[in-house]
Length: 378
Ligand code: MG
Image (tube, rainbow, N blue to C red):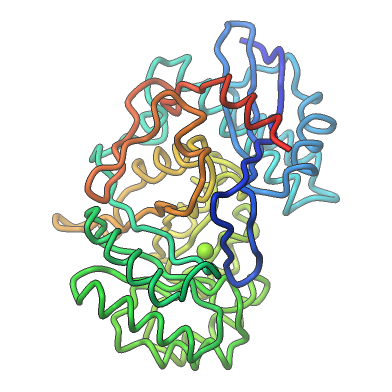
């Protein structure tokens, strides 16, 4: 089997209701998909979690042309080849996100060629229903956040989610009030995480942690800068909430110091950025040495979502006991038509759990007409 074509698709869709988090305000959803075509007629899809124009250029004009004619099933060899090509000037960031998208497409092809769902090649799944937590509670100016957050909390609870994650980063007092409101709304039985998207320095992160730690917070995500593992350690020593992070980190080389120092309790590689599935598995193995949970960041289209799900379903539970509970995977509930509209068979969510796709590869049937429609959006 040979690679005969590689094409990128920058998808764009205006949001019905703009929203924000601590770093950015969104009026559109945008993502970059890649399709890898082969001599056998099998095609694979991948996605990059990165700025669209540079990552598409990195695939179209730099990495893609290097691998025409190669066998896409040689995932490890291709990974090393492409990573080595960019190492001197792009060991993290755009080039690694571009490599991630290609790697996911290679795995899609490899498992389609084998006639099995991707999770089987990654180790197999013990359960075909994967519990997830709802990511939501973004900031919006259309109504008071108290109303919005209470309504969202009730919605996710009624949909059967056993955990949900609240955005913080509006200032310690405002955050604490909103987190208290959500906990009051959902009661004590439902898991609750908070995510600052590195809005704070250690002093404010500690202050917020102390204000909410009595609310039984499962983790505090990206409390401080993703460039500062020592800052995480500083926060960790002073609050009684586990820390999560890693969506801005790349490759096993990037994750290694975070894991070795135990700066995070939950590692959150994004498979569409960290180096793809090939590298995600290595990061997970490193994390297991330090008994750190891996639960992927997943904020993309159905393609990225499926990659995260197959990967996660095939990871062993830690620690291995008869009664070990699986930790939860992210389920983004913010407005994103790419989760459902670009595939004929969106991944099914039932009572707060994803149902693992069972068709070969990622298990998605891409709706090309919809992809083209979003591709041409202004
Ligand atoms: Mg996050």
